[in-house]
Length: 365
Image 1 (spheres, rainbow, N blue to C red):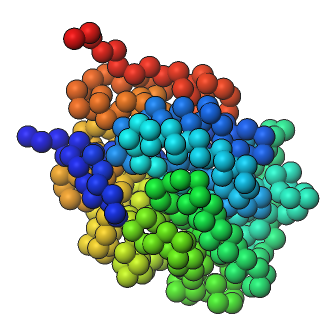
Image 2: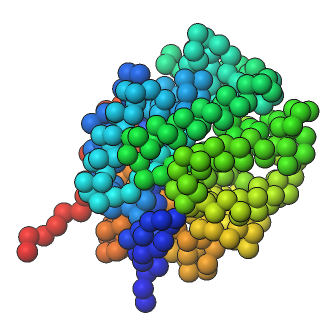
Image 3: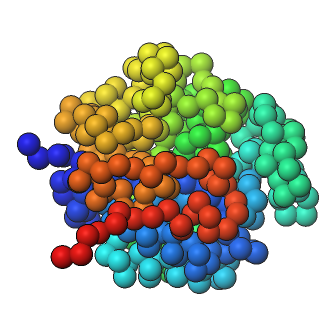
């Protein structure tokens, strides 16, 4: 029987050789000025056998930054750094999308221009701690964006999309998940606005749809993806009616004809979480969305393939297993053992735990 994970698939204007997506993975290894380097190019090139690579989240502006040593896509130096990455991936025959990111309230004044407050839809501090260059510090109460400022942030997304095009990417993914700015606008736990961007579901979805319209104007819809996390509680996220909210949002995407919708699922290796949220996974959204679906959620080789066979998704995103197995498609094809990953080297550091995971040893012919 054909193993569906390893079969070709059409995604937007691209024909992919397999259905494995390298998920966006923050690794905190950008250089000064949040510029990608040759080390980052080596890392991504090693993983170019993925059907599609989605890069680590990359801030669209200095204001969008929320973690140390994360790459940006707003300066000429960053564009030049990303060119190293795209060229290296393309030299290996790979395809790579850049994930566009604004963290909103998930930041700290020490990471913001001139030590300013982070911005958000509403002045509501998230629970938890911010990652800074001097260690963890409590989140502060963000400044609520003025209505007049929102078009400027939409323009930052558009300009970042232009920069990604100049850097040689094959497409972009808008980060609308995991409690960052777009998600903060969507969910009523973080959005208490009373203007055109708050209150009703339609109003709370307005910012996302304006961002998508702006970046589609640069790339065309068939090279734009979107990531959402309908069940996510990361970064203190919650909504009074997530089923109604995300049902509306997902159906509103249909006329846009995006390259794909990328859903963060409850972790497959946590049955308790899955039982509580099983009605908001890919299986729920598949009948509502007419386009290509990518599902991410702690999948194994077998569980990922089962989702494809069930028809609930078209591609499966892998994170931790791509960190430790640069040749993951080959290992899946051979059903070979996987390198274990080391959580201690996930974030920050040098080549250790980044570019030194071994590929399969090949026997001489």
